[in-house]
Image (cartoon, rainbow, N blue to C red; front, side, top):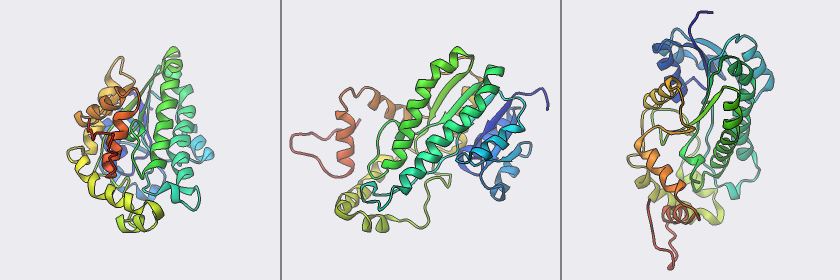
Length: 285
């Protein structure tokens, strides 16, 4: 071990996790970069050659314990590991996709955070979690992922004051769409197959597919930009709890957090699926 501060980052094989591990190495952190499949760590080793690469499956308690058994000091945890899906939740033949989202995105995040907390208490460290705008505003046909990310928001918001009383700062970073990552890419799923599986919701899904692209225009930001937001949060003496990583995400959050009765978000979502009741004027925040 060196005298440098130590950060553990989950989900580093690609995307935000890889970019964060690389940025933290460049900033002088001692980086423990975790991956579920070490066979996919080639890009990580190239981008962050100084990182200590460890296997970690956040859904496996034994894997979590083994990963942390070799960590003697920890100044920061970045919960990044996650999955996404794109399914007509109400037509699922089983709850498999919903359970998978909760196991990885919520229970996995909780398991890693619990394992890290004794070390973070000892160092007066930071617990950062990569959230999502979908943990604040629900997205049609992405109900399972949204449910998991909403749960993460609630858990971390509840944990934050308790952790702070014991010297640990908790923050959730909220990016928008990050196109330069494999997260959310499903080679065996396309619009036609999802629509075909949507049953009575097929027409609604078709309208959604036609309209949502315009909504996401301008929402994208590179993984490296999110990683820089993570490094800024780690450097702040008193980082805020919720940190949008770009202007688009900030505006998105503003729309929801000012929406006391939920009407603004519901009108927005109805516009996405092409359903605007006669007594409900269309509105976009």
